[in-house]
Image (cartoon, rainbow, N blue to C red):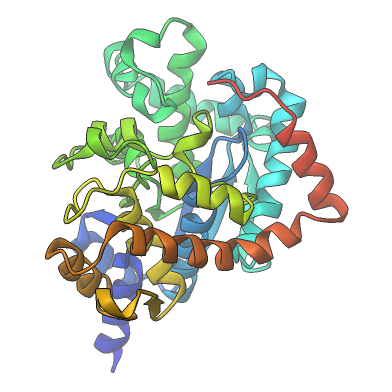
Length: 362
């Protein structure tokens, strides 16, 4: 009975959008030896939330909570400050953090079951900075520069000394937070692996890395065709700084339809297809099944009950891109409708207006 329970917890943690676990054996041992492991995910607060940063994250956090992990949402406002997000305005960055909390709440995160911590509080603690310096003493400048993708930047963009602090701070975060599981996106791999590399030198056990998939941008499919490497995922992901690549949690049905109809979605092609990804990582995680409506002459309505079924029928040409796109619009509108409603009044509306009207910088 205990083993079955363990397997169920592993299954929840491995569920999409999880893409890799380093290592699965370490995770298994952690679940066997610790009743409630601590997991964390960090968020650089800038711009509006989209499917990837809002809905997808909420799905994974729910998995982790069901797997009996305690979860920390780490609002990395000082990281956004270092990265010059929101024009480098720390007050605006903090407002954006408050907006993120409202966004996750609207997307389905039970904020009473998670712990929300801010980097701006941690930086008041001398022990935080001591840990950062301990990490920095063990990291070469070259290695810090090589970690630039975690900031959404290329190595050539690393021009300022403050930028070198970013990966060093992030490598220290899990130890400072007491996190056993680093549950971040594939784009954060340079920092999570650095934490693993340094753990024993700093006197800690190696942390488990649970990296989740980066949702493909709507127009980026061609760049990701047949590519599974991390760099192509980062390059082609949904981005708030490129609005037409992303479905934002506030988008109206008309806006969703415009973007989905313009999205890259070649017939019979699954790899690098952002519409297929939305079904795999969002729609089929939110709904047990979904009916794709079609005229009788094209086979009639099609009931989709699993991603494997969808992939097979699409790859074989049994489902036309237009029919898939039409149902994608309906499903996303259904998912986002209560989220939009959440932001129609009170504090949530005020915060949304502040962030919506701010200049997003990268």
